[in-house]
Each structure stands twice: as C-alpha cells, then as structure tokens.
Image 1: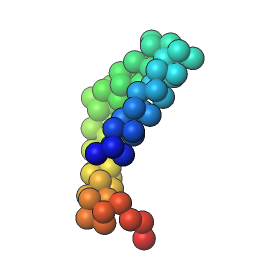
Image 2: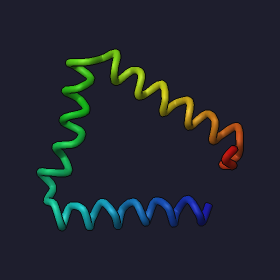
Image 3: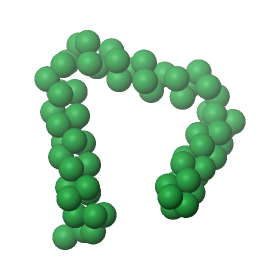
Length: 67
C-alpha cells in the first residue's frame, strides 16, 4: 500500500511540475488530442488500448516481474 501511495504522490508531483513548466493549457491539450483521435481514428485508438490492456494483464499475472 505504501508503494502505491508513493507512486501516486510521485505522479502528482510530476503533474504539478509539468503544469508549472508548461502550463495547464498545454497539459489539457493532451487529453483533448486523445479524444479527437478516438473520434477520427477509432481503430487505431482501439489497438493502442488493447495493447495497454494486455500489458496490464501481463503485469497482474506476472506479479510485476519481467521476462
């Protein structure tokens, strides 16, 4: 549990630093482009999401081990 909280805290710090350096408008542009890609090219986004799902499943099955 502590490792997950540490990871979440690190993610929030990274987002905060990125917002400070780049600005929120730039950071919010990324999800907007993802939604436009989903609308314009649903098959491509579907393949990417399927790949991410398989990676997550592999991590859950393997317990985080590689190889």
